[in-house]
Amino acid sequence: MCGIVGIASKRQDVENDILNTLANLEYRGYDSAGIAVLKNNNILCKKVVGKINDLRNLVSDVDLSSSIGIGHTRWATHGAVNTLNAHPHFTENIALVHNGIIENYDEIKSELQKEGYVFKTETDTEAILFLIDKYISKGLSPLDSVINSLKHVVGAFALAIIFKNYNDLMIGVKKGAPLVVGKSDNHVVIASDVTSISKIVDDVIYLKDENIVQIKSSEIELFDTKGNPIKAEFTKVQKSLSNDINKNGYSHYMLKEISEQPMVIENLNSNYNNIIEIINEQKLDIYKKIIIVACGTSYYAGLVAKYWFEKFTTIDCMVYTASEFCYLKKRLNKDYLVICISQSGETADTLASLKYSKSLGVKTIGIVNVPKSSIDNEADYCFYTFAGPEIGVASTKCFTAQLTVLLKFILGLAEINNETDHDLISKISYELSSINDKINEVLSKQSLIAELAEYCAKFKNAIYLGRQNAYPIALEGALKIKEISYIHAEGYSAGELKHGPLALVDENMLVVVIANSTSEVYLKTISNMENVIARNGNVIIISDKKLDIKNVKQFVMPSIIDDLTPILYAIPVQLLAFYVAKEKGTDIDKPRNLAKSVTVE
Ligand code: F6R
Image (cartoon, rainbow, N blue to C red; front, side):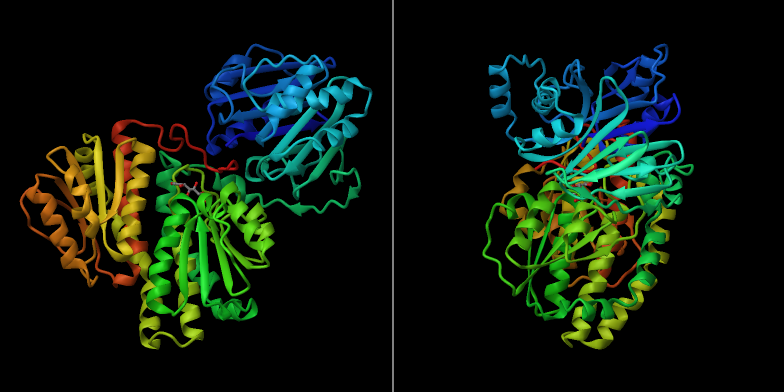
């Protein structure tokens, strides 16, 4: 999704820090970029379709030196990818960058057209641009112009605005999309996330929804949307964040993040060894109905959790994709606990589901990787996944981190409620504490996965199969490979194959089978695989049991208790997707059309 930055400085070289911050925001996903500065009290704006490096090239011989400016990475929502639609947008009076959506832009546009405004782009952004411009032209102050404009606007968005003739003034607005304000001795900075500015600021304010920030001669003032002042609360910036966004010698963020999983799981094992205390303190053991809401990979973590809830507890667990749940209008009451899983903590659908649940008085908890994100702020309680920044668009370490937190939580509930044999809980907990030896073994054999990937890359279609707790891993494997290698892939529960998808299987179909031999349905999965072999499908099996079947390729896994299959078997499916994408030469960390933080519904 779009990334925004605005910098007001005591120095005259904001353009460099704006471009560097935009490079740090690249991971969010974008298709065009731009920068605008105030130069001799006039707005100077440059935009490109393409990457930040293209923008750097474009401005390399333009004098953008200034003490104030804004920048943007655009992930197209309204209007084609072109320089006209790219941000910043500007008028004679103002320039602004925008992340999110102005839902009623059409209505505002019609009104403003009647007043003579000529819309040139296909974006929703021009509506708020001209609205603010209108109030400035009427003689209102910049702050009053913004406050008045916000009264007309519906949607979830964040803005950074600079004003002609005010070379020391910048205004930011947070309304449903992320925005932070940072400061150092030289700079005051507005940005979409703290990681992108951690090198250039020392303290940060995590803005709340409906906050307006005015930066005037380096002074930071906060207001609500009625213009009432609000006290600013600063937090020290963790300087290590800027190291976490380096590739540390890896070719890709995705590979780095896959490799970090042992460290992440080790941290979680120690950070949550007090899970029973948390459950007791938060009174989370009283619920018999749990609803999990999430999107994409985080949703698949929820699907795994359902298997664990059903096996280890008597809790009824329902799992929904957030975009469906928030409009289902399910009749929730205080008997329900709603768990929202989100790496970014900003996913608009998940956030909307959380707000809906809260509006019915339901207790909500989040499982997020980004502290101070919107879901962290809104939920009654949040479990952090402590995985460090995840930059690759395809989620990897946060998926296994979510699974680890969920399993520890579910085993904690089972223990408190005395619903599972204590020895089994101890055995699983013990195996979880030593799972890293097995993950490291898989990571050490990745050259074998790279060889398999060479074979897989020639296929146009793939089916991933698994049963029981391996079924969500089949879904996740298919999602990973499709999003970064663009091979069409679908995950099925292996038992469903004969009810339709088998019709697709022939000598052109790749079929990846996930089968841990410690599962009670292992032999059934193997039978389902035989159905594929009989129809000339091209099978790769990921399993701990060495098989010798003609034309079947295999990646041999370490042996593990079946309950931990989802965590361990996630690793080879991530690696397979990575190496297939590498083989195909795609932009692995920034796959086409996708965004890391999906802040629009
Ligand atoms: C896939 C992927 C996405 C996200 C989804 C939810 O690799 O990363 O499917 O899982 O967009 O994002 P979060 O977890 O930030 O809510």
